[in-house]
Length: 320
Ligand SMILES: Nc1nc2c(ncn2[C@@H]2O[C@H](COP(=O)(O)OP(=O)(O)OP(=O)(O)O)[C@@H](O)[C@H]2O)c(=O)[nH]1
Image (cartoon, rainbow, N blue to C red; front, top):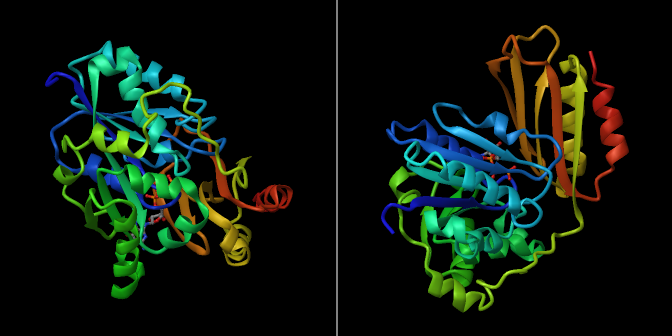
């Protein structure tokens, strides 16, 4: 068992702070080599672009959710990684915010090749202290992610009062009394609390889902949640884009579960990156566009009842 490569499944609802946690882990002077597998919901890869690349290799799985259509991809990527055994110490799988962690975890037990060579170390769930209580009401995935967690990182504590924090913590405890729970701001946590936990407890999961080890376990996505991805070749006018995106977040905020994008502003050598959850938006200029990189702007808005044509039209109207 000891020579099996540990796998950490990083989950948590849209915008909770998974990539923030992942970047924190990868930026630490850990002296280890991690293989990172990211899966995102949305037709264009943005997350992959936002992971701080040091030495680790990042494998992207788009076009679907890891818990359903791309599970074959996950198995293939892991098989490929295993052929290069010895080159890395651990695998981290970041799932989409809409993934049910059960089938992802199941892969590490049911697929023979994968289970021979890897072991699921822990399911780590990042929870958004501000929005989790709402999502527990309307998003079954959010609840499953908490139920399946071995470690819970209760993030964004800066956005709530002490009472709200205690309330969300008690809601989490009602679903999962077993997981280790940490309160964090910007996912600031000791790496040892997240990786190398040896915490995944199959017995507990079997009690939760007796058919966990049976194949053909299907997860139905919340069909109401859609992803609108728009790309634009060429530069964007910040004087048009910024008021528009701010206005969209204010107007459609309750319906927008997540928004993000990488935008090329006219005359600006740096990439503008914005991130949002509901009506809260943040954005800044990050690294330079590389000489070999096409200045393509891409945005993704994930939510309910979104007006796709109007978002597409409005973004294209921001072209410089
Ligand atoms: N105020 C505040 N914002 C945070 C905190 N942690 C992360 N954020 C912001 O929340 C947004 C979402 O963070 P991400 O790490 O991208 O979340 P994610 O879970 O990877 O999102 P998806 O992969 O799209 O589901 C970003 O704008 C972050 O900067 C926090 O503790 N406090």
